[in-house]
Amino acid sequence: MTKRRQTYEAPDITVTFDPDLCIHSGVCVRGLRAVFDVEKRPWVNVEGASAEAIAEQIKRCPSGALSYELPEDNPTARTP
Ligand code: SF4
Image (cartoon, rainbow, N blue to C red):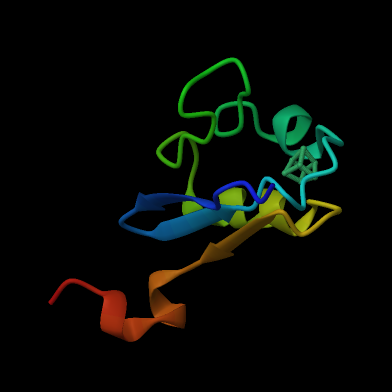
């Protein structure tokens, strides 16, 4: 069964998590626990670090389960 993709939004970054792709490597949790903590709900806290730090950590996700979008990637999503 396909699990639902999860989206976590902050003003300066939007994080998307696809549970179907996650291989549970733990790279995100070990690398940036202030943001990625499976003991917490929601398990992604986009306020826990800067957008840059979150983006750098997401680039290390080996499965592609985590992805992100910055406001400058999608100017129409910006609040006027
Ligand atoms: S780094 Fe990616 S693959 Fe590893 S646990 Fe986190 S989301 Fe899953």
